[in-house]
Length: 404
Image (cartoon, rainbow, N blue to C red; front, side, top):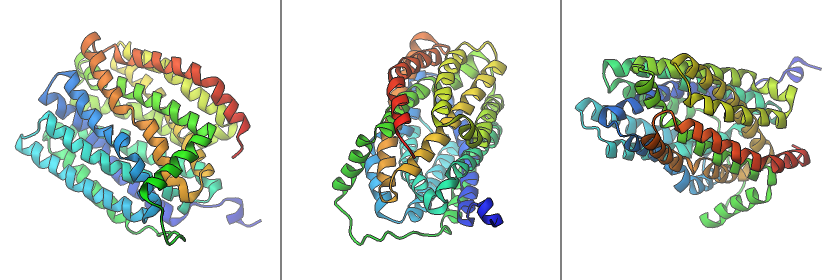
């Protein structure tokens, strides 16, 4: 047996995708820390802050299905770099408006929706293109690496940089994000292209219906998609209160908030590094159940955190098990779904999984406004627990009957 057969390697094309992901994630991490800080300088009303968060995720509900059909119809690499080029322009606009002091809640909401629309196209294309760059036996490893570099940039490196730059000048973290989009798009444009063998395509409505039918008939992926929908609804329900919990109840300043997010990212980083070995040792079902049960408890604990250290530790645990869930479920879809349907099935899956996030954000704003900054996370944990109990028998049965 040769060395390459004993230890297959990820392709150069994959590593270009990895570098693009890392560069973009640093900019997005700075953006993620800066946006809520900018929002609370405009308004202290939790309901208005939640509107900005809801606008970011609303495109997953409205645009995910047609985006998935486009991903299966057109060049996936071209869709990725063009979407990021548009995002560079939009974030650059945020930087200019922030520098001029022209930011308002409606402006932030419109810009958040535009960025979210581009993210829908990019994310669907990125997950669909990965099996073109990576052999199936390496998908868990490749997705783990993607989670690691995303975590390092989006949660570990980017947020403290964003908090620090925001403290210097409000426009700086947005300018950094715009530059990261430009560099990432340039790298993505060099990826190898895979042309479809099909010369014609069905009408858009028919293409979307094919993806809907395929997912509806697959019990395991259908169950995971619905469970993801509940979980992300609850994640947003709690998450919209995080900046208020940290700054108002625990009295963190802008750099401190960025460091809190970075500390929490340690768990996500470990989840990306250890996700594939954990799945290989435990099995997919035990890994999924461990992630789901643990998140119920940590969500309740986050809202009751007495100080920033406890809050950061619980966020780190949540990051670890959430990343473990992502490594398992993304790899499952890439292994099970035929390549020519992957964009459409992913789009349906993520519409169900992410489409309720705007409602979760609004619900979190209402809960926080009515009951205080400590209430949203425990409510979210309780809701997650109820739906996990309901889904558990179906999930276990489906996993045991499915081979992949």
